[in-house]
Length: 246
Image 1 (cartoon, rainbow, N blue to C red):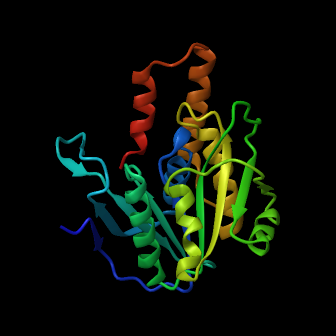
Image 2: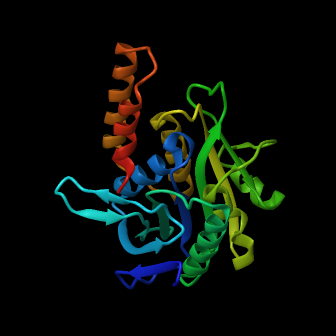
């Protein structure tokens, strides 16, 4: 059985697009970022990826129907054409993460992509307010491009999962890869950290997403924290997280 299946729902033509990747990770930072950026710029879905490397579960929708776990590709034309890659979860195993990352990069290479930006969480016990954003790349030349956007250099640590692999493997496909990560505690969906990543991506893409929904959610979470300084229950955390399972 083939472990992966791409379903292309729309044929599109793009001019040297860049790829932006944001998947669920610590604090759901990468997913929240991609979710609201997609909504904010009204990007259009053109493909889905299903894989046996994903957990064996389905999502039950409010209307009673179900959907299998999947990845999604969106596009937006503009001064810089974009492809945005996101998904419900990451692959469960290291083998699955490598295989899917390679398949995704091979797939987007067909659209003449030139650069890959992977977004995610920089877990720290003492995040700044607002969270600082750090970046890394495969070469000093590429890293210099990030510093021009005010992104600090990562000097230590490990990047776990597909939000690291998707840019680390990019050079195999002739793509320039960048990793950009926002500070977070990582123990609950972190809207504030995701918002800092959106600010950076907005500069890179020269787009101004509508963030009304994200701002409302940030305000709502702040009000909840002011009312209750205790640790949230697992049910409350799950309710917040489920908003980003598509």
